[in-house]
Amino acid sequence: MKGFRSIFLLVLIIPFVEIYLLLKVGGIIGAFPTIFLVVFTAVLGAWLLRQQGFATFQRLQANLAQGTIPAYEMIEGPIILVGGILLLTPGFLTDILGLACLIPQLRRKIAQYIIENHLVQSRGHFQWGKPKEKDVLEGEFRKDD
Image (cartoon, rainbow, N blue to C red):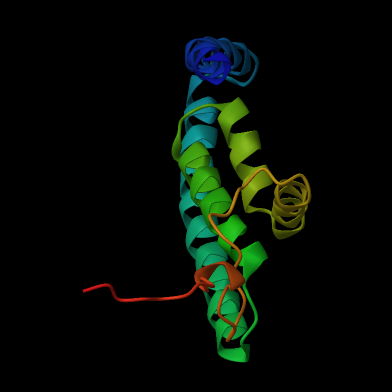
């Protein structure tokens, strides 16, 4: 329930922060340059989303072709998606967070943090080419008539 409260607070607070920043920046540089910056970051976000998404997908395919598990690529995919959504959302705070998700070095650090701290749980122990030991049941069989 604590996670739900945190998400609820973020959904409430972020729009107010974005409006405040848009008004402050608009007061400093003017309305049209502010609108241009918001549109520019949306276009930049769409371009980066496409470029980084294709690059990550190609690395994922290459790892699968080599027979290795593409752990980082599987974590980076959703990070890229969130980064693209944040960059397409109007506002400066979401643009900064979205850009951090789409820069390859920062994204790799985020994925490394997620993997090292076990923030993503797996539903089993997968091994290439070997059956899981838990799938084998030991026992005896006897048929009674």
